[in-house]
Length: 606
Image 1: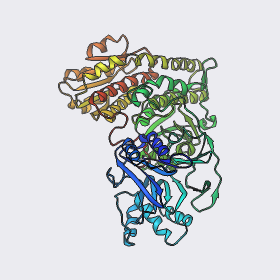
Image 2: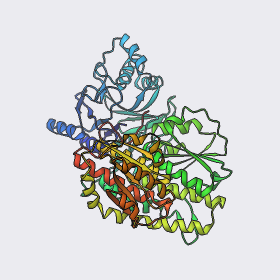
Image 3: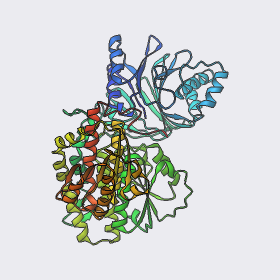
Image 4: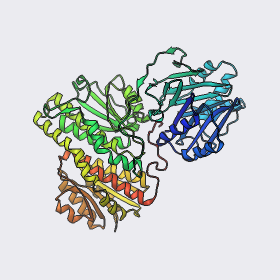
């Protein structure tokens, strides 16, 4: 949640900050603000709403400065008001701060600071930090004050500070929240995500946890939280083949849906050989030795990918597999042996709940992570990681990262099967041949988007939906329902088809739309029975099935079809329909599709 950007250099700082915040707006868009030093005073420009409003306010001032910090907010403490908008400053307006994260002990600190006559102007936890630093500066020099401040904070934080009396000083701090620092040709940049500054730099320092960057008069050093200097080495910034522009699409979400065939190709290429019947996902095979159990940790859309992965691991390797919501796993008392392999799935690699869960078991169990960001916290804390090669996903609602995660889970499960010889090489080759066809089959569906749009427009005024699926397509129903909720604000629930008669069928009355994910697989006959039960009670059936399934067609008010495909890979195709269906309903309802209310892309606070 929240995006921060900082800059000191030769160029127009506010232009660079605004561009960076625009790229980071997927992290939060309740409000946005900048702070800079002008005539030895902190100046702030803040606006409730999106970055474009802030940009307009800045342009009206015609201010030109060469150092600034900026922030785009997703509210956690305090409602999205101008007063709660970052940056925040101290009582004397001599220090400004932007913050991504959450301070767990802010109430105790706030009470202490109020007793010392500090005046607060917001409801945020962030403001406590700048007042605490102000208090410490009464007794210590700047660097010692920084150490004394951050070492009493509990929680997660990426921080940037600027100082009215020291216009060439900027301090960045990372603990449990991402922060990146970069330098090029005497221009210096901070960002909470590489996309905020990638157009300016070729290399960047992806900061370790508990790191301070002290940048003063074009010289910079790195320190730990004890004040000891540390060495960090820059890494090359990969230029993605996927660009951050919409490229003619109305929304980033639609662009990213249409990017899925290429995202799958990029993700799976060079990781298998059909000729040899071999898979190499870049993980040391010793991690697969003596595995008796697999646990998958994930949240949201990644959790649904994990549910599909569960079928792959159990069917291809015979290893008992469970999937846990990371947020709930942390509280479980489990004694897993070394023979349990953990797989953490996160698009950003910064998901707070998943990070907390893997830290609980780190050192006791082997951990493989699947993320879309190579230098993320989760990849760093794993024994091995596998990257999806999706490029930036800007829309809050995940699409291409979901299908890419599924494809990687498919390959990872086959690589374990290859190691254990649980299934024969001929079968592995057959699976790989089917996987290679998937991008083309996806493109066939995407070429039908206009017909999907017409059907979606028949249902956009409905206020509630039911989704059902069975076996490997039950998670597709969950994900489809989530997409509809996220971007259209329609109440929607998803159930395993067999569960309808155990209670949810009471929700059905005349005209209730029911989306049934029912391709030709081992569960197809059973879900037809569930569909018929719903139809007899008045449901309108929108089905997703295999081409030529006339029995399903006869039960459906509208039907989307996929080409015949291996049953294990059908989620990669059925998912496309659920994404487009949700998109076109949201489009007709006139809501903000890329930045739905109350949501942020990366959930970096609990």
